[in-house]
Length: 246
Ligand SMILES: Nc1ncnc2c1ncn2[C@@H]1O[C@H](COP(=O)(O)OP(=O)(O)OP(=O)(O)O)[C@@H](O)[C@H]1O
Ligand SMILES: [Mg+2]
Image (cartoon, rainbow, N blue to C red; front, side, top):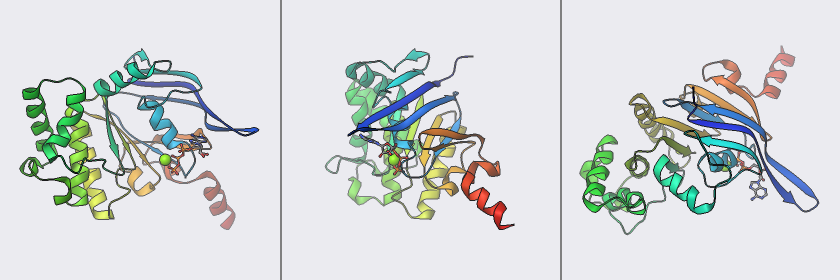
């Protein structure tokens, strides 16, 4: 069966003076339609680099990336932008809402870029605001909403284009823990309704809400499996220390 996301032997190498940094060092990941996956790892482990490649915001130094069966690893910028508009919905730690536009206009914006006609834009934007329970705030400005509500608007914006994959990079990073749990609850709900969600976080308590965890360390995958397996959340060196302590 064809995977929705298939990263094969992906390297991302940055020259740093005489040295090189292997931000991704031979990564193999497959993700299927309907999965809820958390990519975790400590700072500098390669999470954002992986997200940028999966999100067609960057290309690998080597290796191949198939998204929906299409090789996107060697695409030019304009082709990548087209794939992004059609297949990917992004949620960021900073909601990136435009302060002068209403909630509804913010959600419509990616549809405008994708060339969707005005009447359809409005209809789809309202539908995705309904999915996050914020249709009644459509005329508000972002500044008139709470942080959690603003993040829900950004989720609605990600959904409006009916993406194949929702990519969320530290979506709860700017929220208090209660609001963060609510936002996560929304991502879980979307996943139950059939959306594929890839969540990036350094927070284990967030990651365990996913079904599957992929842990990166120094640009390599060091765990890939059930989110509820204890090995999913324990760093190997921390586990060694625990064993030694016993
Ligand atoms: N443009 C760049 N030039 C050089 N090195 C880079 C560049 N971008 C990232 N790196 C390096 O690649 C490695 C992985 O970075 P990345 O941003 O993917 O980490 P991360 O897991 O997202 O970390 P954080 O949790 O702090 O956001 C780091 O060592 C980083 O310094
Ligand atoms: Mg990062």
